[in-house]
Length: 155
Image 1 (cartoon, helix red, strand yellow):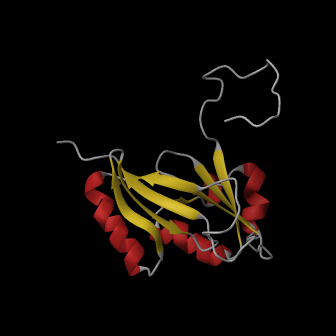
Image 2: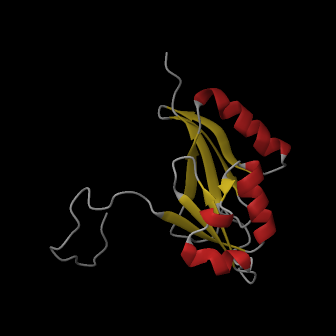
Image 3: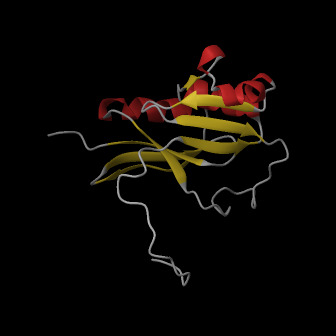
C-alpha cells in the first residue's frame, strides 16, 4: 500500500536493478558480530586482497568487517560503539528492516537450529513450518533479526 505521497511517472524498468549489491549493518560490538557472522553462521570474512579498495583503511582500523554470503552478496558490518536501539527489547524496536534471511538445504535445517541452540542464541520464533518451507528466527548481537530458512523438501 502506498502512502499519500505522490510518485512521479519516472520509474526504473523491471530488470534495471541487477542484484543486491551489499547489506550494511551497524553493530555495537564488532568482535561479537564478527564471531557471530563468521563462526556461528559460517560466512567467509574478506581479508587481504579480498577487501574492496574503498574499504581497506576502515577494515585495517577495525571500523568495518566484510563478509560474503553464499550467493555472493557482501555483508558490511560498521562498528558503531555508541549504538543503542530505540528499545532494548528487539521485539519492540522500530526499524524499517525486519530481518535478513539465509537459505539452507532442507537436510541441513535441523543442524542449523542445533548450532543456534548450542551457541545459546535465543530463538525469537520457530522453528516454523509453512507451505513455503521451514524457518527459524533469532537475533544477532545487536538485536537484528536473522532467519535461516529452507524450501519444502521434495516429495
